[in-house]
Image (cartoon, rainbow, N blue to C red; front, side, top):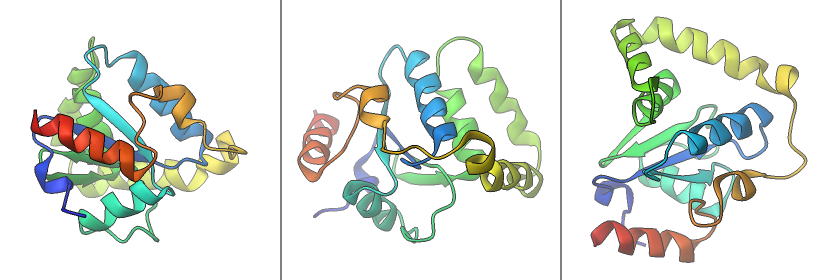
Length: 154
């Protein structure tokens, strides 16, 4: 399959942990504040998530971070979170100002939360992302990735 990541101009795909209750909550939060439907979502553990992570130059088997694919680039950890908030409606883009904090400090906080996420928020029995994001915003197989890729060209 051709590299999809490099062709994402004006489109955003957020790869999140499909087994993480905190990640499900974050996805729900983003969907409710993304009225223009700029974001699409995929589970990191899915075939599509693994493919996209690999195409972005990331090791899909050792991902411990959300990944934002945007305009041909892959962002992880706190940068992915802040860039995601910047793309939402309301006052959330203001949080992007935290980008002035050096990334080692931001990522230290991100990694602490990530390491505690299962203990604090639990694991999901099944990936709830399709129900949260809605079928039209969730990329769950190669066919839906092709559809998204075609729409990105239009």
